[in-house]
Length: 403
Image (tube, rainbow, N blue to C red; front, side, top):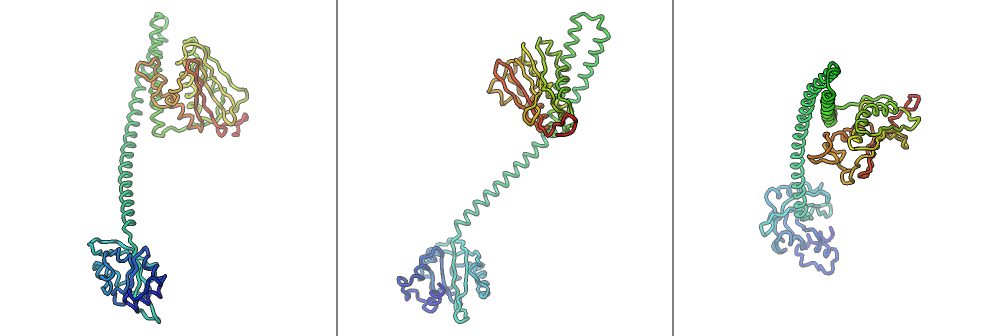
């Protein structure tokens, strides 16, 4: 191409060149980018069709004109500076300028310039100008999109901070108010037990039943308050496990002893089933005991008659604890909701069963803190089985060493 352009410099009138016979010049004429040649003084001696199209000028209007015709003063200074340093100009040195089109439109182009040398003597310059309007538009759209994303991200962060602050305040409030509840409840329980023990011989059976109801109702309320406290701690990640080796048999037996009076009061057959030879488990005894009691109490609550079974067995690499019952069961459509906070199988205001619906939520979180999983199987009208696993990593061998 340089040979053709050198010839152009020697024959400034492009019409003197036979473009139909010169394949190289034909390629230049039909190039996608604007290609031009000017002499050492900056006077155009050749422009291809794309240069005409880009500038809006006919070729005859630009030939023998200085390139300053289509550049503003700032861009003209930039180009003149480049030309003075022509010995260091290379094609890969691209820079942006704006062409002043004949229509008055300002068109951004990416320009590259190279000197034309003959016998080590500078005789002119060739340049290629690429229209970058579409690129600029795409870049602008991307910048606008990025700006929108940044604004949205900032709003989200602000909202998240407000939510986090609200959750912190709410958690502190719940923790404080529930602790305040526990003091009068424990006072009621203390005086109830005192009255029952000191006046037992003088109270009628109806009065004893009333005291028992006061005690049981106070215990229910205290348990609900404790559930709210636990949930608040879990939400704020304040619960720490006190892990140690625990006997599976002890966990099951103490759970059975705890819920036996309630099951007996409803006429339910309470039984346990423990696979022989189970190893000890490395768990927080109090938390796993709470899970088992929650599951057993639920089974009793939702069983009007029949039986309750609390047990444990080896399940591949886990110890599986379970509580089965012959109660009302759980409809399939309710199965996805029961582990959510404040949910029950019957969540209406007129439900027949009390409680805040936190037991299963807390149980799930306590089990997950131990690396286990909780689940259930059920059939409406034919009972349910709730189970959770403790992984082998948290299990000890029978001699007390970790397996």
